[in-house]
Image (cartoon, rainbow, N blue to C red):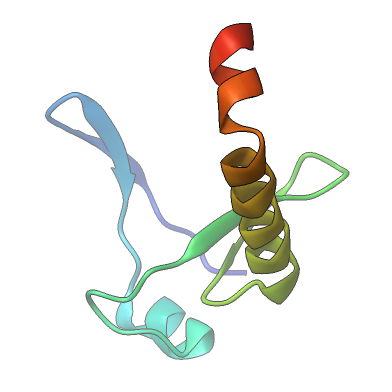
Length: 74
């Protein structure tokens, strides 16, 4: 387990990812990451989440197909 602090920057709370954390994620500065909530309430930081990407892609298709109905409901 790696400990890090949460600090305030402007109106946001930020967590610094150390070089060790970036290496474990196989990520570098500028990469996108996903924060995924587990069933137990935990959070995971992942560089790629194929399941999430599939769900978001499917949601985008559904929203495009039903844009008129969704706008009426909004």
